[in-house]
Amino acid sequence: PGCLVTDVGSTKAELLRQITRTMDSYFEHKKPAKRPVFIGSHPMAGSEKAGVAAATGDLYANSLCLLVPPSRTPPNSLRRLRAFWRAVGCDRVLEVSPREHDELTAVASHLPHLTAVCLVNLLGDAAEKDRRVLDICATGFRDTTRIAAGLPGMWVDILSSNREAVCRGIGQLQAKLNRVKQQLQKKSRPGLRRELESARALRLRMEKPRRVK
Image 1 (cartoon, rainbow, N blue to C red):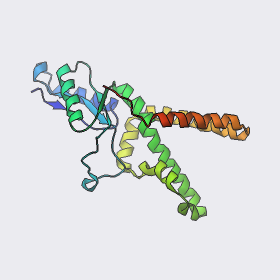
Image 2 (spheres, one colour):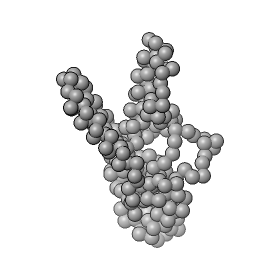
Image 3 (cartoon, one colour):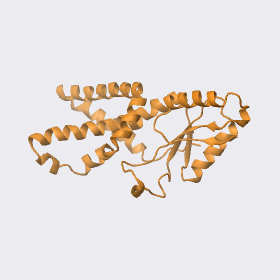
Image 4 (cartoon, rainbow, N blue to C red):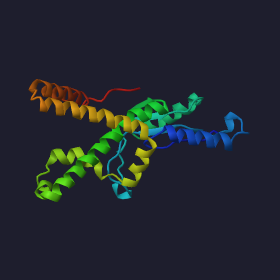
């Protein structure tokens, strides 16, 4: 009774719908105080590695954890879960709705993974014509595409369960690429510079983590 349950999955809307439906059915005759409480969690930390050999004790240090509470979540349960994530190292905790979570992670996590995958596959196509392209991939390419080594099975699940938001992100990325392509076709050095400067300024600001209570 009153047990607090959470998860560390990368998508939430579909998960919350299924869990809420299941728990409402299973515990329909229980008083609210006797029901377990589920609150979604998504610590924004990790790597492309998997398995026990890749475990690290400071995985969550200085990271942000997203909490995704269903409606009517007891405030005390939220406080307990906040305390839990802070105890394992997260210094920032942010509450969002399931829809907000999936929209935000589509752009901040899922689309970057797909972009890295496409870049590596593009390199693979080029390597079929000239394998020397593999040898000249230096730090920039490796840093940009590190996450493409993530587990395919897990990512099929993530992308499939957040399909709509990811597809919207793909369309937005295509528009960004087309705008840069147009600047190059028009030989617009000022336009191209604006794109680069805008990205550089934002990326430098991201070096300083925002404080979220």
